[in-house]
View 1 (cartoon, rainbow, N blue to C red):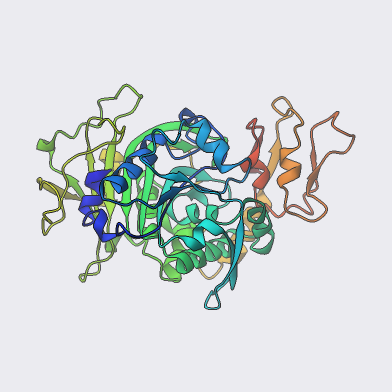
View 2 (cartoon, helix red, strand yellow; view 1 turned 180 degrees about the horizontal axis):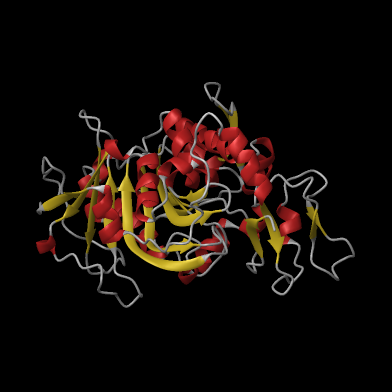
Length: 422
């Protein structure tokens, strides 16, 4: 963690000790760390420790989960006042209307009050697949700044992947997170973002550019970044770049002890990766490394930029191209939706056809008839509902369904999948 941030110039490049800082992890739901649903507590604690050691005394952390509470999610992964280095758990339940007249898609947002009171936001996203956007990472993570019950309504207002991605880009333009870190030590593949399978990717990604960060994730799993709406719309709305020619990848040289094959006691080796803002040359920079776990539980290794900033111990490094990135750090078997039309002039037609093809379905053997899917369906009149009390699982009305996949995302029993039409 520390060295990834040092590659970008050190924590002082992003925050000052006197500022109010909000650290925003992914707390989709109250799930154990090994499920890979939420940002790992070791990553969160490492970030809070770095801020504490930098003299930042007004630090809060939190997210607005789609289901349950921020406090419940934090408790489930073992975060307590005793191990969060003086940081306070944010109350993400009270909302404030924030006008954003310059928004291209949304002109106002109902953020949690803690968001509006923060001077700086640091985003700690989780590397996962996503039924609507294919993957979720740095760009999507900001949606948790909106109070929980309003997030479902947002899927009705912004009903397809491209329009929803433009709304996410507007959130970035509004709140301007200063630093993005993606937890990919153990990622989620398959039926993400809440019901997929954990898979070691052994990386941490750091960036000032959320789109470049997500693009590196895509490259690692052999997914064309241009197929991801949050990438294409994010670049179109100038919150970052996804083009490989404008992203430079940097990793420490072999003599630093990089060894992705060695698995640690937690089941995965740890690596650090970084992307930086575009330099005057027009290229974003990315760095990678692995190291033994420190007491904080985060990986630390020597890294430096090409001009070798002296905020930390400099080490040798080498640059990688996309092929080398996939070869050394990638996973070609990573389960993610790779089919589809590139984001061209026919993007809306493509989104429409994709939404028709991928229907949410309930596995009756796994369903416990808890009603969470019904509760979180944002469609007026409900696109999924019980027909005969709770004797049978809920039934979909696909004429009403907008394919937002809130039901699939929130199902606590992993009983809902978003699959192709049979």
